[in-house]
Image (cartoon, rainbow, N blue to C red):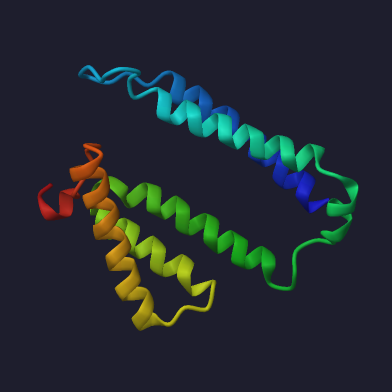
Length: 147
C-alpha cells in the first residue's frame, strides 16, 4: 500500500515538474536545444520511474510490507532536507548547499561527522567546478558570499 501512495505522490510531482519546466524561458539564447530540455528530460525519467512503481510484478510489491520502524520519520526528514536544499540553493550557493545536503543525507547511511564534512565539501566544490568550468553550466555561488 505504501508503494502505491508513493506512486500517486510521485505522479503529481512529476506532472507539476513537467508543467513548470515546460514554461521555462531563458533571458538569453542557449544552443542548440535550450534550457527547457533538462527539466523535461528529468520529468520523463521520473515518469518512467512512476511506471515501474505502478506496473512492477506483484512478487516485488508483496516483498514490501510497508516502512520499517522509524522509516516514516526518516523519510520525512529526508524530504524536508531536500526541500531546504532547494530553498537555500540561491542564498547559500550551490557548493555550500550541496555540501550541507550531502552531510544531512549521509547521516542516514551511517556516515561519521568528520568523514561527511570532508565528503560534503569535496562533493560541493567538485560538482561546482565540473558544472561551472567543464560543462559551462552557470550555478549560483550564493548571495551570502556576494555571488
